[in-house]
Amino acid sequence: MTESLFQPFVLNATLTLDNRILMAPLTRCMADDNLVPTQAMADYYARRADTGLIISEAAIIRPDGQGYPNTPGLFSAEQIAGWQNVTSAVHAKGGKIFAQLWHTGRVAHSHFFGGEYALAPSAKKVNGSVPRMRELTYTVPKPATAEEIEQLVADYALAAENAIKAGFDGVEIHGANGYLIDQFLHYSSNDREDEFGSTPENMTRFPLAVVDAVASQIGTDRTALRVSPGAYFNIEGDKRDRQVFDHFLAELEQRELAFLHIGIFDDSMEFDYLGGTASNYVRSRYSKTLVGVGSYTAETGSEAIHNDKFDLLAIGRPLIANPDYVEKVKKGVALVEYSDTMLAELV
Ligand code: FNR
Ligand code: 8K6
Image (cartoon, rainbow, N blue to C red; front, side, top):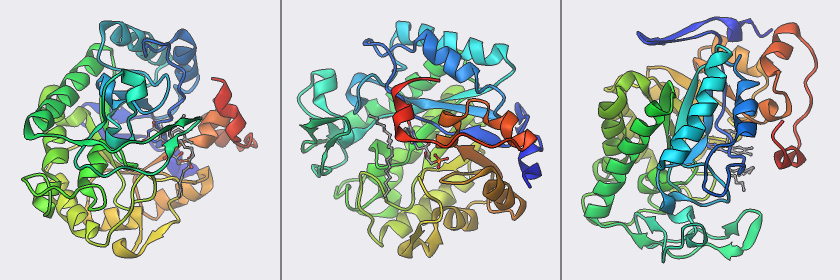
């Protein structure tokens, strides 16, 4: 029973999706050494153009946002041209594609950009080291000054403009998974005492400034946001985070974003301070278009849409394993099972 996935969905006056399956953003670390998307990446995305909407792997807005090797950028002319090749390939096959805009904050590593430190809300480091480059241990970040925060907001807006120049249909701001924007929203990573910390109003100030700057640059109808109210990756949760997200969602409710997207690996995870799963929590506080994700099958995702838990379903790992996921699900053909070894190659 997957029919709920095959209803078209009107996102807004400018965007209608052919089906409700989104390709989740998936970092693949396959850009060239100038962080330019390659022809192999264009082919990989084009093979998935029958999803209702592709969200690109996260693309860094500027050099100091980089936390992993060979993640693509959206700040140089060469990178914009590389993405243009990707978006043309997807559009030629009738698809739609948003760019995911990324700054990793304290999860950045100066190894990648030759700087002295990573920027973050506070001097609170994340434990551990860079995946696949374990010798690169995370360092104590430098708290961003008010001027640096202003510059970050401007750089998100510029990256959004670059995305539109590159032919993307819109952008999803990566506000999830413990990266820069999320670091402002959780007490464990934000202990600022200025206008960007200490209270829900202050802790949401930078995230909302980014949303508003991007929306005014490219239009609210082309602006989406991914959030992780439940901390689970690169960050610790705190029960006071609940008030921050209550406030954040009330503010987002007043904007007409293209959609809000949960960032999570398994949406059956429950968070006591959210009173249940991340998607149930967001659904109860946000009435507009919501994208669910996290270890769903086509069947469980379709049922969740049918039961009004969310409106659209993002699929990650199964789409790595099955470029023809949509066709297979439609025909009821068995899927290839995902394994981490598949990350070595773009199929
Ligand atoms: C991810 N995920 C992720 N999320 C995000 O917001 N930006 C990103 O660039 C990435 N990169 C990424 C790479 C890889 C290899 C994996 C497995 C995951 C998370 C992803 O979008 C999704 O939320 C999860 O994979 C859960 O969905 P599935 O895979 O259970 O359908
Ligand atoms: C070098 C590639 C980096 C990719 C960054 C995105 C993260 C991919 C991680 C794959 C799976 C990790 C699952 C972590 C979930 C924690 C749940 C408690």
